[in-house]
Length: 157
Image: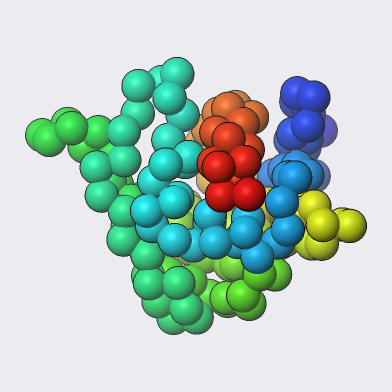
C-alpha cells in the first residue's frame, strides 16, 4: 500500500478503497473539533494557501442529518464540495458524505484526547477501488492544511 509522510502527518492507503490520515495537534479535542465544525474557523485553514485556493462560501449545519457546502475559487470559476453529516458526536467524531459525484467517499474524523493534545484520525472510504483510484491525489495537500490548522489552534489557544 502507498504511504506518504511529513514530520507529523501520516497518510496511508489501508486497502484498495480506504485512505487513513493521522495527526496529533497541540490542543484539546474540543478546540480541534470547533475548528472543524465552525464555518468561520474552518474557512481559515481548509484551503491550501500554496495552491491559491480560496473558500468563497462555507455553510455547515453540523448535526446528524445536517448538510454542508463548500465553494472554492472566484466567480465564475468555482467548484463545490457538499454532502450531509451521518454522525456527529461533539468533540469526538464526525462522519459525512461527499456527494459531488457518484463515487464520493464517506469521511470519518475522530478526535481522541491524548494528555491535552488531540490525535486526529481521518478516514476516507470509497464505494470501490475504481472510485478510490479516480479520486486519489487531494490528500497530498493535507500536511499543508494541517499546518494551517496548527497556526489557527495556536491563535485559539
